[in-house]
Image (cartoon, rainbow, N blue to C red; front, side):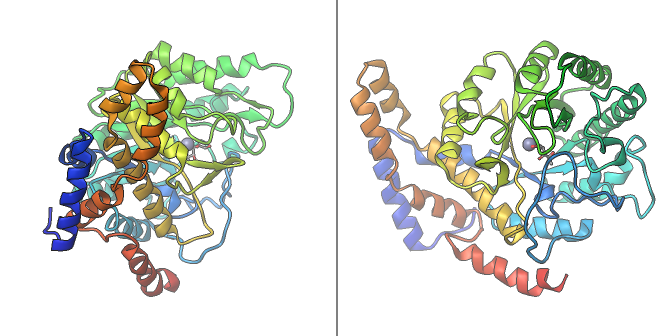
Length: 422
Ligand code: RNT
Ligand code: ZN
């Protein structure tokens, strides 16, 4: 940690006293926060494009809107942009990569022929920075996914192709985990579903279970690779039926001992993942979060410090789940500076976690257990205006990243000098 200005230091000491009166240990909260690695999703930097250069449009029922200039066109540009973003985010984080970001040197390599050699630059980059990596097989933007089905396709040959892709991706994940000394969370999300009302909802689910079982047949050391499965309510073009629904994957994850991935945008708009965390943690060892922000629908807006984000962070802290929950981000916005999008989303996530770590939880629990719900509500409201921002500023300054809005000017400078020249 670097030195702080005397002003930041003074303000911090006062804030610490204020929190101490409520029984909150600020130093402990900061040391806990600094140990949390958030997985930054590579796909915010290039609108989920990837580098296969297959000529395929983005498919799978997800969509990126906006045409803000400066998107990364090459892996080097994407890495430079990630470096820039991470220079404005306190703490050490992770990179979450999709298989479609393979570097094949211009050679056409099919998705069932990939191996870790195509990800060596990414691994070396992460290693250099002491970061871990997470991975995702890519089941979209591909001719064999063009009719909206992959692992649950009725054609066994198509299923086989995608099963092989899954098998290969687990091996790649394990190599990443081994090379970086930290388990790689490998997240399986498939777009499979019907636009209109199906008459057979069961068969595709049986095929999906069969495909997943084939992919996961080979045991892999969890020190290197952890498998996660991500459910969804609907997508563009799969409005009436998604094979991999929440119930499907909850059952699958529990019965197969896999991680369940909860994406904040993948439920009915009035449903929140914050309420699901403690429920699924009853039956699962670990889970993955895709922290996202749906606006009216699963729109993947940039994460902000919303009530739901705070509720998610509170659940992780209050339930003592931080050691069992992997936090990944999942949003993509091409209508604003893409580096800024990463910074806004990740800083918001960290702010929410710090707020949760600074809660006077002992007092709040006391109110609840004695049935004093008046004081519980009153305390929760008073907590919102405790000097959180002073602690956050101190954390940023001592982590060597810009304090407050100072980072915006840096992103603007990067835009002028680098992004606008693309
Ligand atoms: C799609 C899922 C999935 C993707 C990424 C790109 O609805 O949320 O996680 O966003 O794999
Ligand atoms: Zn997701």
